[in-house]
Length: 211
Ligand code: B12
Image 1: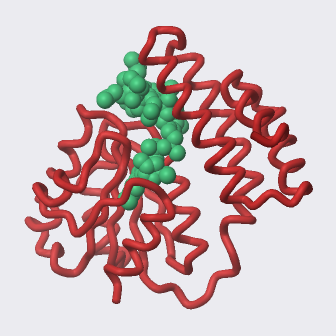
Image 2: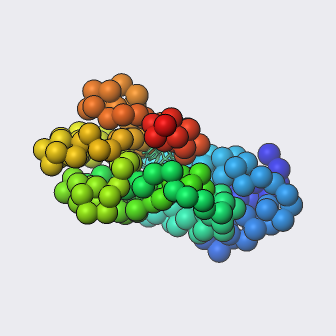
């Protein structure tokens, strides 16, 4: 691994939220592609944080400070991931489902979609089915993106799809879902239009759904 990518990786793992943006800036200055910095320096670090948590070596506070370092690095990367916007391809209401506070993956998907000329209505985290419905009815969203990182909150994706149906707007929108525990099979099971395992695949999927 390039030394600067290793430094980014280490700074996230150690939750050094001042060092991460500095190292991301340095990596960009060294001419490393934003996608490489993201995937080979940052996303892998969060995966390692998850592993350490699973093994009982990290606890919630360590996860939290690692996430803060990740977010501060992403803030530097964002302008490079989000290119100039053209006429929006579609209006996307994106959020992490009810009960779930994980937003790094959702934010990444939003950034990449924004960079690919989608308009984003970011509903944030802990988003109730009613809020997704309101974004479609009142803000004219024609795509709904739901993220869930917990097996306990995943069922709220299904509840949201049902709420869209009950509100009579399911046919007006494409529904995309994702997040670590989510699968293609689950997307089919709950009647979503698609699933993607990462942010670049999310862009390809979103484009394929709007044509
Ligand atoms: C950081 C983190 C936290 C942070 C979140 C900070 C934040 N602002 O997001 C904090 C400390 C708050 C946290 C809290 C908790 N967490 Co946590 N957390 C993580 C961790 C380490 C990383 C998640 C992450 O950011 N990954 C990096 C991003 C880039 O990846 P991603 O989210 O998967 O997103 C990508 C794809 O999935 C996809 N994607 C994501 N969303 C979408 C949406 C669409 C539409 C599409 C198409 C694609 C897509 O694209 C993204 C980009 O490539 C994971 C471990 C892991 N391996 O996931 C645990 C993990 C998710 N957490 C876990 C747990 C248990 C918890 C807590 C319950 C802990 C506790 N006891 O309190 C709480 C729950 C709080 C809540 N109510 O939500 C477990 C979940 C277990 C399970 N199967 O349910 C995990 C898996 C850790 C573990 N290995 O046990 N956590």
